Image 1 (spheres, protein in one colour):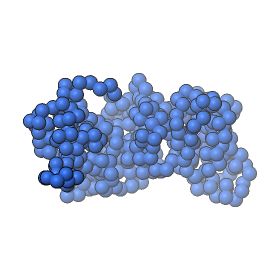
Image 2: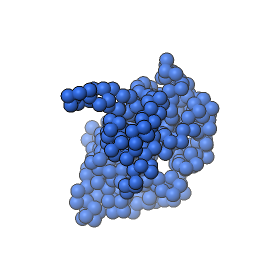
Image 3: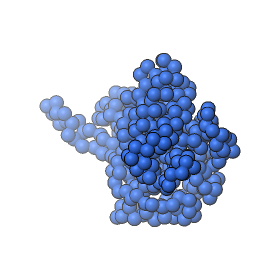
Image 4: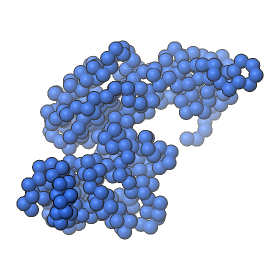
Length: 389
Ligand SMILES: [Zn+2]
């Protein structure tokens, strides 16, 4: 960000940013960095202390006399409520203002029951998880949902699961019980944010996260920020067609979309069509362990088609790292090696020179971490701090 004249913008929100990032942790530092007068610094610091966003202690490095009081961001000055709703698992948590989990429950909700059933259950679970903490401590809510989200309108667009989630404006429903800012994004975007913040932030800020699970989706982190596109539909990698897909009709109406030929659902369908009695991924794992050659061929074919699309995405985006997550990618190592092989063969030399292709390290926890950061990035931004609603 270009440096603007500091004094002109050194609001309380900006002072909080300096304290959170560690750029200035004493009143004297803040004065030096911002050019604010001592009374002006004091005014802003007092406001942040009163709002519970910073704490002050006098354990600074001693220089002989009384050490200067040090200011620190108060991560326990509030909580955010988060939920990562997935087609197969849902995690609900209360996190502090640094994004650390304070309490969490994993529920086997069937999200296909629709928002009328699922949202009240999620809100009751938040109340339970809050326990004795007063509701006034809640500063924001974040949800990841298995649907495309029109981010600015905070509304689900096309649901990847069932029609009951299509076109639902979720925030007003939540705001009735928790009158705080509510943020919503699709499940893969929040997982991408979580994986990036927890594992790669500052080291690899251009990251492509591919979730291979019941469905295939992706989240793009560009320059450290999630790339949502004009309306929030960026990253729908599952509906890019592949060559030699066999003419499979996708539920979107096109043929040979990646999702319809290489997702967990597609693997099961293909194996069933070839006479295997497979109900879940665990059945596929059993076939792989038993050395079933046909199953291995099906997985290799899926890897080839996934690799083909990932190679194009790599050419377009030039990420530093491609992370493969979701239970299919986490279960089948040959799928990951297959993708790697195709990408290195088919992407341009420059885009693969330092490219890493790795399996998700955060695993299922990424959704909760990502939801928390999505909320915190907004509610702790200088703009939000300076205009409390
Ligand atoms: Zn499709």
